[in-house]
Image (cartoon, rainbow over all chains, first blue to last red):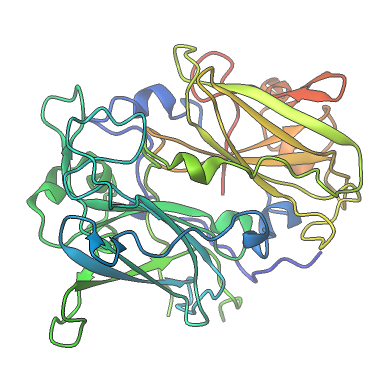
Length: 234
Length: 165
């Protein structure tokens, strides 16, 4: 069985989150206390599901409602490009997105926040990247919300992403943030990535408004999944 | 140009229920011995965890990955009792590897994905051999007929070995 990528490099820990994070108590209840075991990589880890849509059906690519029944909040488009470590597009990458409504309420039975639900808002989408690795989502800008029992931690507006690359070890689950929000600076989840440049890459960029659609702000966001197509030259 | 992979972040507590449904049965139309893999996911104090997402990747009954006849990927979420359940076929051995099931765990409070591997018995295998000898048994499922029980203890006593890569 041929591995689907040529080369997999180890991650730089400074660009990845710590396992146990101050101010986020559940991390100390759930992250392993024993060191992670380094294993050799075989076909098992270096292959992955092709045509994931055989198992997971696409789910709407528009979270902002239909026609006159629009979700409340600032209309936005998120243009996400999925690339590999060489910067090449990953066509066919499956991308799942979910976030709360403009008032900070998720469509989920476990959300105890007393913010109102929005009947015209859809909380989740599943899409497939085209040949250029691009996925475009129309939605509304999510609100901030307080995290219960934390003494004042508010999550900044953010969008959850779940992405499949070419192999099992390319799998990526992350969150996208919005530029300029003061809550970004105190969010234990974003700040758990120590490297400032790596943190900044988790923040989307506002596209020039002159070129975009008349009624929506456009945010550009790039996701880099693990794997290189070619073995680097020595 | 070398780009750095995007930083992983937690799945959070509000992963859409609809995303975790209908992807846990890999056995439909597949050749091989149908088995069930089930277990409980627990945190440090032994409390079972609700809505933990587990993803699975495995070979077919002849040890082949990405075989058009068998789609070796699935996803399940734990219920209110912390129990997950996959229905699949028993994978075959290949090259240096004995039969095994790769599992990826995503959850609120896990800042990064956790990778582990379930084995059917203690045997010589390069990945199992990488685990300290006294912890290897923790990666072996307990068989009850066609059901293989594989509990996942994220942290604490009997902590499941997890892999870094």
